[in-house]
Length: 154
Image (cartoon, rainbow, N blue to C red):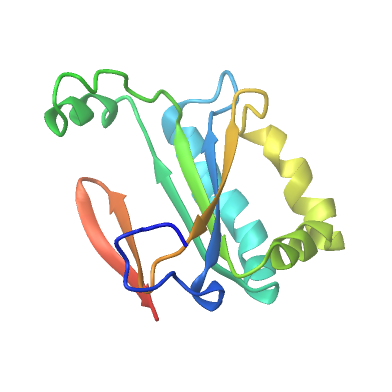
């Protein structure tokens, strides 16, 4: 086993999967309109399906023209490249099967999947798949320059 500095390797039981989407808004859609649509229209479409199919966490953070410049106050000048995406959406789940079941659900196929074209630029948005391997997981939600501890999962 490679030296990791950990007393033991994180167990597979403690592993969670995180799907991160860096999203861009549909051309012609304003920032506030985009945020409203995602939080008040799209999220309610998918929330009951996520719960039903074992999705543990769903977070959405918006990167706006007001918040982007604040990044330069946090990091040194060598970190000069600022991300230009409009939103980060993260899904946390225990297995790929949970997420795949949700996407195969007829309600997802009928209502959620077709809704993406109403707010998202799906050609520019990207996805990233991660394994979370900590023994304890912390999620912070940042909104309006305030941070809240959302949950701790043993």
